[in-house]
Image 1 (cartoon, helix red, strand yellow):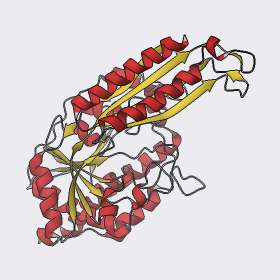
Image 2 (tube, rainbow, N blue to C red):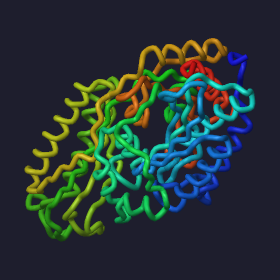
Image 3 (tube, rainbow, N blue to C red):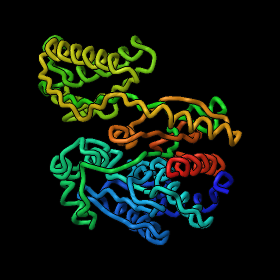
Length: 409
């Protein structure tokens, strides 16, 4: 009977749309920044659903929430998880699918009267996006012991608030311990956030791992001066150096090829006036690669160029690392099972890496972990237009249900 179980796709879709009401934007997107009032409302709703499904809910000191369904035996649970925070111009599916897909698995098993041997857990982790607090994914980092709790609690948001203070304010600074989790295996269902599955006609992605991520912030300080009267040879133009670095980052990605990508996602000039040479530039560079050695090459080349460009223009350079994660492979036997289950369901499946970071890469350090991808329409994510078809969502949740049920037996 367990082999024949399928999720209720309409029920899962309904929950996704309901959660999207918390932090809803007028344009149809979602803004549920970590530890904001909208995040609190979303948390309250998901915790309510957890308790309605009979889960025992615990909250730890960094606000991670875990709901546990008892098994026939005690022991480490099979965990399903993701996040419910979003970027400021987010969509309805990034993160939310993994959490609500987990609740759908629980409700499907409840409806069928199935009790697994091992306990099952559904978790959502704090600040996966890193849109309000940095580094990103500090909830799962603290959960697994890879980051000190105090470091995360003292992280300052883009609006000047400390994470610990915001946790208290919204009522999600819990007392469950952090740093030594007991998890049998971890599975995360997620929208691809890229174009590959849809473009190539695949319904399921068996994710082999997460590429390495390097975020660096450069602060360039020159001299403000008149745009018309200052000769080019006498300028100390922070904006020019920032532009040169941005172009070179793209050149590095093109020359290294393969999976190397480079993005200048934020760039602010000061005084930011049409007729004034920029005195200051603040910029971020996001480098990613599935190969850690090539990622290191990209980092070294970028830094070398930035130092030379700043010196050549008489501009000072300060560099600050915002995040650095090595590439993470997922458990090969779990990747193989995702692939096999999809094929058993007659779902076209492709093995691929994840270009985005996920909580699963942190959990992979303490237990076997894997991810299941569903297609993203047009490859669009971190965008109000983010969309995944209901039938694709149901298919991904069916694979999730089969896999976690196997693992819990």
